[in-house]
Structure formats: structure tokens, C-alpha cells
View (cartoon, rainbow, N blue to C red):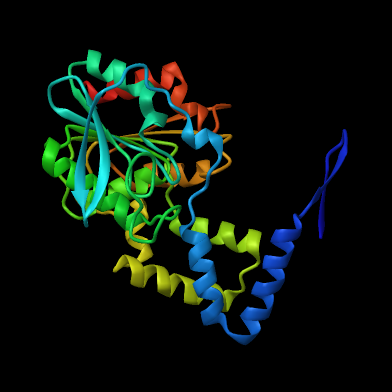
Length: 292
């Protein structure tokens, strides 16, 4: 299978890897014969964590105080810097706390204590309930709740990507947060499902069964992970998103800002999904907002 993309300057042919072609063929057959079995396989793909290098960048300039929190018998790695009211850093899907390391020094200089953690299955934390290399949003939510129960009520939370959605879910569940800063927020959980569907060729029956399995695993509706559906208890929120973000659509962030009366939005151009976490002007905007 090949895909040809043409622009006025050149023509490029992108070949689908043989492994992906084989998976697509298998899902096409299972869609017709047994979509329930297909949904079991698709759930494994949905819960598998990406391993690209950008998600493993370490932007910390100094080591903090290491500790851990016990969650369902598994250790969640925690690191903290400074003194004062706690501001929590929440990474995204497949990431870890070091990605948000550039925020640490400016926040400490602003007089707060910075607390960062790795969600189960991520970074230095133990594997989650689905095993090594896999994860789910509920564990993100419960990890933030568990860390906050030890380190104190969040003066603020700075979250990235999928961490924004799970932070909003924690707020939905009663976490009292003074302010939020969402950087490149992931908003629509079904968009991720649709992305997997495009890559691996899930059929509509498979997707339907897959969503049922995801919601059964989570013990709640997938819509609970869409911040746009949160209508009460929304703290003052700063949203920063880049027009060129290829992982989380910019339009979704605009929709989130429009749906939250307490939100302000800043748009960047050319920083993408990962470099936005290292941009000095973005960091200054976040620190300034949280320091008001």
C-alpha cells in the first residue's frame, strides 16, 4: 500500500510498513467475523505507550527531593523543589516529569514549591495495572489525587497534552485547584481513537466494541476525559497552544477556551507539541499567570 503526497515543488511517496499492512488486513477480517476479538486487540494498541525520544527529554536543571506515593501497591515516583504552596506538573501520554523541567526554576523563584510525578507506567514509576509499556487515563487521575493528598492542595497545576484532560477529570472528581495552566492540551479522547482507526484500519463495529471496553476499564464514560464537558468547578485557566501542533489539534484548544468562561488563551506559531514546553516566553506566561 502506498500513499502519494504532492505539492507544487515535489512528489513524495510514503510506503506503509509491512507490519502495519498486515495489521490492517487482520483487522479488516476481524471486523467482518468477530469485532469483539478485534476490540481486544485494538484495546492493547490503545493502551500502548509511545516511545519516541521527544517524550523522554529531560529539561531539569537541578535534581529535586525524591519521594514516592503508593497507589494500588505500586510506587509512583515524585520529585519536588522549593518551598511554599505546591504547584504540580503533570506530563502527557508516554511522557514523564522531566519534560516539564524548564518550569521548575522560574516557579521556585516565584516562591512556590514545585511537585512533579510520573504517572503509573511512565518514567520512574512502577508499571500500571495493564502491565509494562501500557497505561490508561484513570491512573493519571488517581496518581494526581494521591500525590496531592500527600503534598497538599494544589495552588496550581501545569499540565501538558493528555495530562490536561486527566487534570480536568481530577477537578471533575473534586480536586480543589487554585489555577490551571494547560499547555498544548489534549481535549477529545475520541480523536485519539480515530487516529488509531486511521492507522490500523479498525472498522466501525470494532471501534464501537473498543469504546465499550475502554469505558468498562475506566469505570466511566470517555466523555469524562473531555475537558469541554466539565461545566462546574472550573478554576481560572490559561490555555497555550500552537497552531502547528501535529498531535493535539489547535482547533480543539480554541473550542475548550470558548467553552470555559474562566479561561484565557494564548496562541503560538511554530513551536509544535513538544518544543512549546521549552520556550522561554511560554514559560514566562505560565509563571506570570500563576503568580497573579
